[in-house]
Length: 133
Image 1 (cartoon, one colour):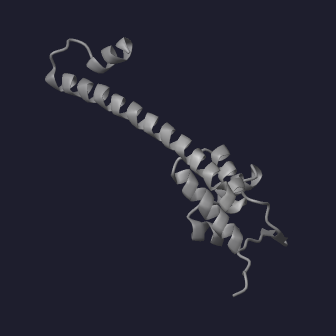
Image 2 (cartoon, rainbow, N blue to C red; image 1 turned 135 degrees about the vertical axis):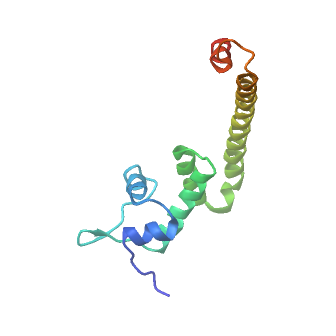
């Protein structure tokens, strides 16, 4: 089946990516500038695949620079698998650190809410916790 040209609205529908986000990705070089048919951008199957890749990587929390690196590594084939693993391992370490931070925040907030509900503190426990931190 031949690769049919689609417009940006259809690309957006197929990938679940907002039109303005697609344009932004083009401006910063994550997506190649598409050829135009008249005044309309014209996309193909490769663009659908690439944008889907970018969107899924962003959903996993990869930064734009990390996505750019992943795209470059993806173009390299199997030889780049170790580099992809290293990038993913580094990202996983960052995610785990953020999870630990979120758990600490949860404990402080939960304690403050309980203290507020108990009504034993003459001031606001959350405000006191923020000053103490």
